[in-house]
Image (cartoon, rainbow, N blue to C red; front, side, top):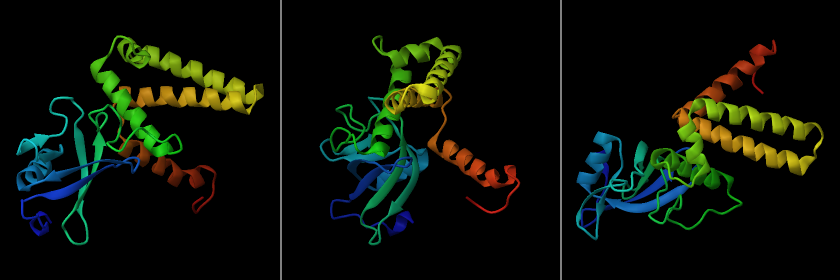
Length: 211
């Protein structure tokens, strides 16, 4: 596959980086043959820095490494789609993507940004972060917070109205993301588990077929 890629006259090919879990486009950079080979060999994304004219591993200073999931050339083999699991924000500004702050109407992109932020909080443990405090306190504290938020969500559903229920639900979702980060659950693992439960659901009800 890599032998078919058409590099330009400078020996470069554009690489569009996409979050494999949410579909969000994270950044655009360029690869040469050396960067492509390093990416495939290490499964951590490398680029060619045009400003420094050298190999550049994304996240080598920030820690926000891009873990390769899949690399796909376009129909003309002169551009690459690089699907990744980001270990933190892709942009040097701290945003999840290099295309500006998250759009509040785009849930997938928002969740990508939140997940990236939580991975960064767990790694760096900043002093003024509530998320970092949960990670510092460990599994027991996270479990207690999960039980607390689940109880408050259930109470809201039983009689506190739709607006309050949504507010408590998002608190619960946040703690669930903290839990997923704590146990290093990957999007692929979560999706596979959900797909397995979906397949098992008809059997559990004593039925056949799919929903």
